[in-house]
Image: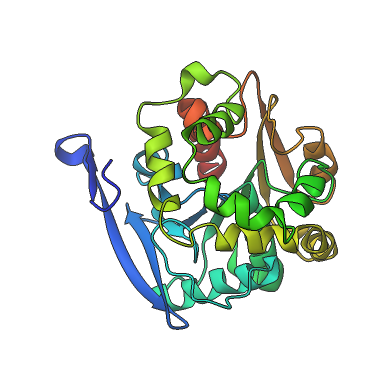
Length: 290
């Protein structure tokens, strides 16, 4: 898929057209992709991802819903003005503002990794707008992974070096990507290039560093917000070999919801929508259609 082009899949009446769109939200340009028809489904990517993450999911999910796949501010090809607040509650509010401007009064909400935490914060602010939640290995207070690393990478000494070097060292990029897969042989061609394209833009890591600076405080705020979404029917999807967000934390998070299903995918890492897209899409579609 070209990063800035519509995507057509299938043929004849089965053809799905994925349209690239831009919208101004609170004066900031958002880039997003839209496809399909029916009930609205909003997809929220992880910390270093963007709508590219959903390239194997959108064509299938769009057969059952009107899919909106956003590039959050500072990710992909959306703007991130200087001084923008990078805290988790702020991103949750921005997601609600995107829905307002895009004309989406309510939707099913699917978020992965850090985007899963954003999804939960957005839902906690307006639970009546989200009939269902789908959370894919969401960052949560019961996974210790990242709590120490976030402090190190966002420190005044390390952050400038990391921001400068990371987009330029292909070995670092490749190592990080391989770590997110249980089986690196499953990495689809063009994946590394697709993710790194936007990250090579000047200042692309500013949002990520900002997120890391408030990481642990934001996890505490997320834990306090969870009671407000406890009644939303929720699907949790995890890979049992996730190296980024501890799979064991899935069971602690599941306890916070009154109607929650957990799908644990065997021999799968942190990106099930890329590593085993067939299994991932089937789990999501079954949840949305039953």
